[in-house]
Image (cartoon, rainbow, N blue to C red; front, side):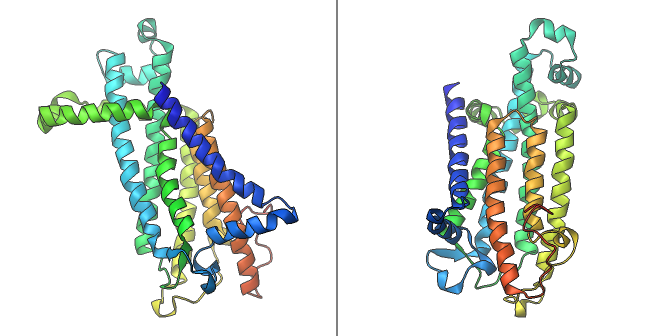
Amino acid sequence: MMMELGIVVLLRAAWTAGILPIIIAEIPFPQCNSFKEVLLGFAKRGKIMQSSAHKFTVPQRLFSHFYVVAVVWTTLLVVATWLYAYRTASLISEPLRYSTIASHLTGGSHILSLHKSRSSTEHMYIVWRSLFLLLLMEAQVLRRLFETIYVFKYSPSARMHIFGYLTGLFFYTAAPLSLCCPFAPEMFKFAANWLVEFIVKGKDRMLVSEYDIWALVIPLMRLRWYTWIGAAIFFWGWIHQRRCHAILGSLRENTEQVDDCLIPYGDWFNHVSCPHYLAELVIYGGLVVASGGGDLTIWLLFAFVVANLAFAAAETHRWYLRKFDNYPTNRNAIIPFVY
């Protein structure tokens, strides 16, 4: 219990530590201006980073590292959570069948409720819901990895600050973990024990004789209504981010002019300068809704995404206005008609 609490506290502290500097930088006091400039220096990358500011920077194409780490780490968490959910459910309710699991998670079985505690039922529901959130995250990071390799054509001169690079690695390690942190230490211990058992028993005996495929899937189909609304919001943002990234990638199809910058048009670009950031807000907002809105760690993750992307979008918007005399005046930075 103490280890679970420790991970939760550390993650919440980390997200809070990431949010506070951005809030301080946005305070409209002259004393905060120098701090804001320092923070902008860390956040700038690509076209908005001046060529004279390349000290302590790395190539922007190293963005791919974020998503390689994210895909590997999220996949490990998905597998570990899935096995943990299945095996723990089998200890709580005997015999293990998909119909009884689904009833157990949704509170529909009066027989089970007679001999299983409410806390065990709720714990298992949280585990299956966290697995669903991790699967959504997996869909996001897989697409981002694909786009980084095949859609975006980074200029050879495009750079990002080393601090931004390290922040990206941290984010894509901590974000998936935040979706399952309430039971992460217990899950990791289970996964380690399962791996030893897998090695001792062998693949055939572990996978064929002990696992019911339906029982691995059906509980996900019986999650509560708000989880599916959150998933719909998530994929709404996911689809628009894919479209906006395709638009950005198409601006540099001619690799001989990869350093040229053009005004993007289409989809949410008709309303804001950074619609891919807006879509990211929708995506993580969908995760908050899918989680039920009761987990402070996920709320802090979302708050960090909002603060970070709003800060970056404002600077990108200012760059567009300085760069192009004919830039559309109806566009906001990230939120239509608001900001």
